[in-house]
Image (cartoon, rainbow over all chains, first blue to last red; front, top):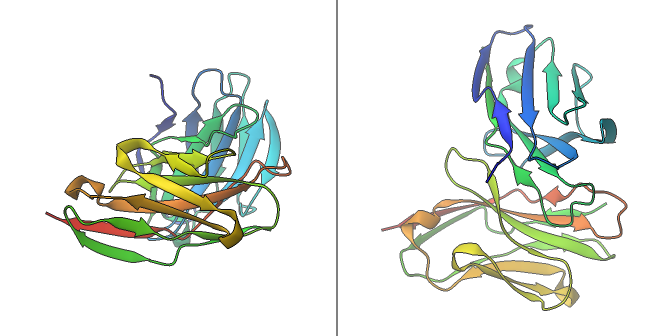
Length: 113
Length: 115
């Protein structure tokens, strides 16, 4: 069965550089959520989109932005990267009313050096 | 706002031992409850979920959890763990009234099972 696809799997960037993470939800899922998981930390919600509109906002820094496109894939854009941005970034998808839990992607491991 | 407390941060067991991971939440309304598992280097996977009905929920891989409303708890159990159960376990709670689609995650419990 199709899963949530994230790319790239690993990314190494230098401080002050930019990064773009991509998420392709499960077919017919119209909602995408982004989470950041630091080492040994629980997943922290960043932002979500429903039908290409931002639906909820969590602890996303102002240096980050995201959007959902017409094919429902989403991109998380990160600028002026800091060492503290090194983390695992998960995307999850669901239908509009996610009472069934999310389906998570495998994540992108971002390392800022 | 909800908060989720997982009491045990690290649990070490031998194979065939029984497991119980505690999860308590603070929210007075109706909730949806979830347990996720994260195997080393992998993504979060849903183990089981509770919305309504029978408070004893069966999940994948022999896991179960019991919702005790009076105790605001949703403890995860498995009668006999295996080495392959070594992973991080996250409890999550979501407001079921539809006010938010975002669950709140606990800090996680790291389980190590010795063969």
